[in-house]
Amino acid sequence: MPLSDSERFSGNEVLTDIKLNNPEILEVFNGWSDYIHSVMPKIEKWFRCITEEPYVGAGVTDIHRKEVIAKGEQHIGFPEMAKFIDLRPGHNGYAGNDQEAFDFIYEVETKYYEFNERMIVELGSRRNALCVIYPKGGYVGWHNNANASSYNLICTHSSTGEGYWKHRNPKTNEIEQIDDLVGWQAKASYFGAYVERDPETLIYHAAQCTGGYRMTVSWIFDRDNEDWWLDAIDELEAS
Image (cartoon, rainbow, N blue to C red):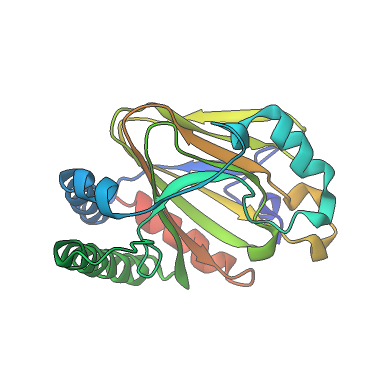
């Protein structure tokens, strides 16, 4: 269902900011980001930084955006270029045999499970779709998630406020940018599928960290669960 059918969206808006007012949920968020911040040197040492780019920063350029959009449905939906560290269990990419590394990876995975299970209960989400860290210069390249159409909650933590999210507004074709703030911020949107035959639901987007580190976690709701998604937004904003 298009976002314009929701009371939270009006006019040409395709993405909305969420005010993280709920003190209990904010405490959970801060506990997770404080932990990650405290172990970043080990994460950078033992977690693989996925890098798929022909040159530095290629995935967030206007040239790449135009290339991806021009592909139409040949663009599956996944980002074709990226540079980030995936914190989800089974995605760390460690290929060594250091027991200290194995112990640390297990620790991070345990902390992730605790954090994610708590948030799934609080939000009523089907599942966590993303939990990544962008180091300085890291990014996710232009893509539209058409292969994973759903209602989304996208929560980002920046250590320095140096970074951004960009999307092409399909209603106006304008490029809109949301600059990062220090700490947590959240936004909500609906990512459509090609099968809907509605170009106004295809939101091409990208994000980059230009200083410090940037962490993004995202939870999704099925296309027939808009009410649950709206309830989750209300829960995040409850003070």
